[in-house]
Image (cartoon, rainbow, N blue to C red; front, side, top):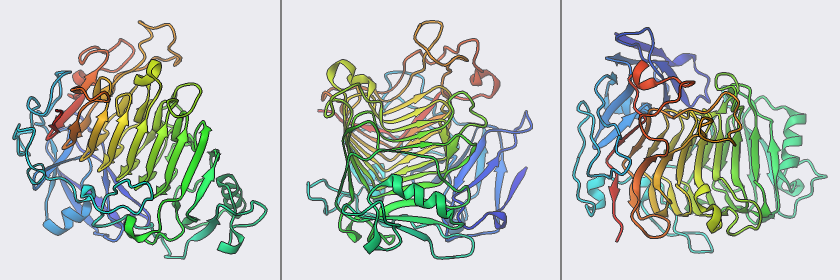
Length: 481
């Protein structure tokens, strides 16, 4: 039966439609999140429900799953469906692009030639390399389109706070001439003003050293965007460069410490974050309350995170350039994760993106990963329905390019979560370019550290109850000399 989604009820800054696909044999299926283009406001979308797994469609050679762009639906008139026949299930821990299956209802180009041309693998426009405006010569992606600042319902001008390397936290940040210095001061200003509209934190180019802030201010209906002072919606070539936050060995630049079960709507656009020891950015919800203790709806776009971990910063080992704990529906797109490295004794513990403890429905697209000492994407403990698509991985990973690990309290004495951790389900790893492990060696595409079929007695076995797979893969290409 069709599902009617009335979009006119959404507020103007909404970035997702959330719906539930009806099931053939049960009342509801999984939650589906559909990103929407803010400029498009169709009133009705029909979704034909044929099962209880995932929302799927085909556009060109691309396999879209639980993340349909409304613009495509509107412009080409595609109908989406809840597929009951997705056989692209990853079961072999050492499988590569030549061994994965593909869903029968959305056929793909299944060529197994690892040296096929980029046109054949349909590389995204966001990864077309162009000239860099960065002084260090890092090549940046040339964008066909850049993210827009989300308009609020009344189309009011945003509340703006200005930041400058020579700013003064005694000021109010209201103009460039009264810029403040730290993100901590920005949060104080926002908390006092409590603006009922979008916020733009406009950051002048230059270097900000040693900053670290625990951030808990947000508005569930409006976005707070941290961006270069000269950013107005263009690509990297439209700004003078990324403002640099150099941690000088500090633990983390920003920890979003919110567990209210609401969207927090922070956006990080074209920033450079470097020399942090444990994490670059940390979105932290409550790992013990998946249902009510989450945050989400955040965006990380066009950022460059480099030299995160204890190889470049003395001290205890790092965990992830972007570390999520019970954080969901985040968009992580067109970023560079470079030199995310721990020293040799803890090298495998460092990841570029760490999705942990209920971090579900996140979209990781069109990013570049280079020199990551551990597996670049790690999922842990019930982090489900994440999509990792159209990324490039070079010299990353100790065991695999994406891995699933959780702390088994029956096997380990140092697990700290009282209720126990569980496997993750229904993640997707598609259309990625995979170029060698961290040490220049060939590694597996994916790995389940506790095995694909083992589910401890305290966890729901979604394979039995819902027909879920642990991981679905297709279209990945591998090349390692």
